[in-house]
Image 1 (tube, rainbow, N blue to C red):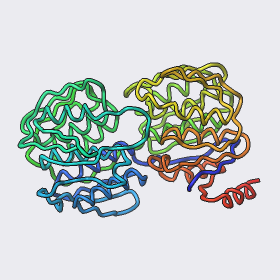
Image 2: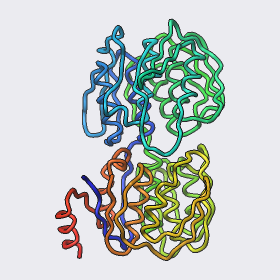
Image 3: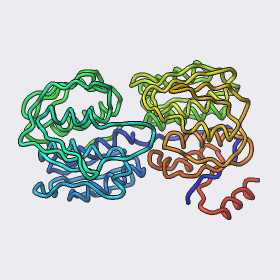
Image 4: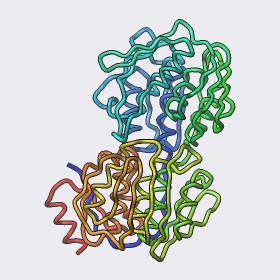
Length: 433
């Protein structure tokens, strides 16, 4: 089983380049099948989730052509609309974003069927808002035998109010509505950067979407979409992870290929606790040479502090001087990393949706397991700080969303290796001393 073995205690220094946004890529790759013409997508992150989704897209009959490691061409014209358009295999059930194919195929063909999605177990993420949106557009939704099926004689534009802000439902309903007859208004829409990116991508294919990035999105249905070439935005969570890692290890890292505006909530908190953040046009530098201060954080929908950065930031606060409070308002299971971090010497107690962190001077090396994607990245950061050696297993979660994570960290001076056996761990320990 693949795992990371890490020797901590070294500050991260140098430059790192951020990949395309995983969460934007998943929506954009699904939307690419909505035209019969070829679509070329650039800056696609080469991570497990995108690879699995591309396999699923091929599985329903679309043609997928890999131009290079980060560029893919997709042609939905080879899909046979008279089939069940059923997306179901052992891989697709493991990623949350499989449900984007529901909205994309429903929007194009008026029917689709997808296995109920999986993904990280970080809390209840019901698809009732997706269903409500599809039904408002005139679709009939049926859930049976682990599959969700949607079908419509015709999709009709509608006024849809999202009871709770949901990124997934906003993207899914937006895709379903772009070729519906008439106008659709989505109120209380999510405002995350990847919502804007998916909307911009659809508009480049000929859709008519206005208001993405605000809480009201207006869509005027079009008859068809056409081919395009589009480049995905940089990943704000990967960028944030390296920003926090630089601060936690008291390093000096230039993080390139970012949109600083998307990182403002993270930048603000790092500045609050005493790190130095310098913004440039498309990069940020994070520097730290001292123990950081405590602060309080509450996760909120964008532009608030992102839930996907909560575990990484908590690691930094667990090392800060004083007591910090982290409140998780998005996903109730997001504190599963606390038990693992406690094995490394962190002092954290969880009360409901709140964690109270009493800062310690440093961590000690330990064998820990990644419970989910972002918690896995957080445990790697903890291991980079810790005295002595650590191993992080279940790194399949980390590989879902971070491209060449260990390689990028090694490029910043980290002592980290991906290994599979005890013998390889011992070899690493002998090599680094």
